[in-house]
Length: 69
Image (cartoon, rainbow, N blue to C red; front, side, top):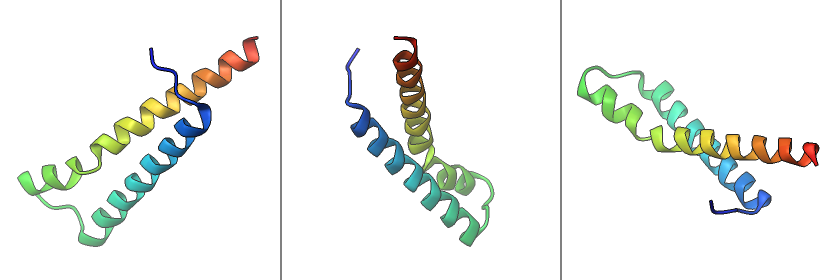
């Protein structure tokens, strides 16, 4: 497994949250569309949601490891 520095993971996590916020802002301004337009509207920020979940889990597991030692 690749080990990434804690600070780099945190910066990537913040970037993911920023883009999730932009996606939510765009959806709130335009409103939800219907049909395939809804799929394309939501699919733009799905990778950032997945990235935020992965980085969040990595940060949390590192925090737990730190306290165990």
